[in-house]
Image 1 (cartoon, rainbow, N blue to C red):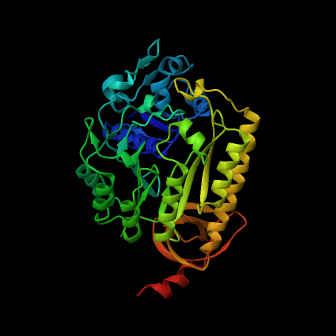
Image 2 (tube, rainbow, N blue to C red):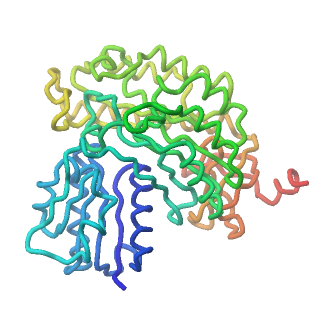
Image 3 (tube, helix red, strand yellow):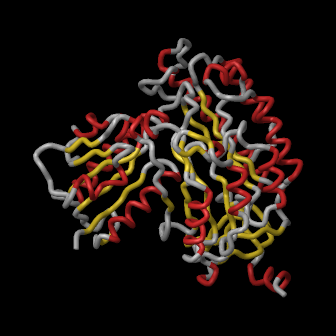
Length: 441
């Protein structure tokens, strides 16, 4: 029995795909092992959102060959689609598979026998037309369920359409089947993932269904306590979806909504499909209907043409906005994007300074959000994450909590009252058993 190990770089979507590919191996008699258990085969699923992600791929290959010098190393994922020849020249790489090939490892690589030259199996991205269903299982407390792939937006800074192709989706019926399969595994939370999930519904180039209708249908699936939307564009987060989430049985009050810039000038240069006024309206609508909702924001700093004044527009906009945390990305030049040709390059030192400012702001926003919810009761999904006798988990509105370790609570949802913020920045809760006495009937 050959041993295979997996390593995933990047987003939740990559994790869902790695998990599905790992099940393909197990169904064929391979033994899935940890990275350090001397595998015969390494499958490395890559990201290419930033230049740093590319460097990480090279480092992982180097470590794999240290652990198992005679192993077979196959690279898949976004970086593999964008730079297949470059990756094939990395010492130790045996095969590179693109977006249209990564779910066909066994068909294309046979018995994974090493050859003198690395195999490059990466079609043009236009060949990535089919939707490959995927979800993670047994990897984490929550499951990542892929519902959509690719993107038609073509933002000036982004390589994702080049790495994953055009927008395409699963069907609602198929997603529901996957959700019911997941429910049988005792998973309590499902995170819906995709490249642009609000664009859900395109099959064979034609829009057949809507993301809102998918949300409505999933809310009726028995056996899953929570559904969480991983990220959704502000122009696709409709009032209909927000209003439904406010009264939903299973969709949680947590929204991650990319902004990228609080300056309309920069938003236009980026090719985004909204202006800051629409974003502000989305936040206001969420908070009006769900005052305790968590709102996360993606921001890019240092985009070409971002002057000090335009950056301050972003900073002040975010500072005044009722949001909960930021994911801050320092702009990095990517080949074959419009942005790389733009004037007004921001020096890296200044990019880093701006990133630091926004990360500090993010911590202030997160702490304020946590403080606003102290004394309130929420449901926590506890994870197998124990540090110094404390176990951790997340409330439905994405507050990370710490409680006294109890093995019976792992992968369980329990009502707790938020008590105080500890030195690590997590929220301590009143002892769960005290809350059970108060709430269980």
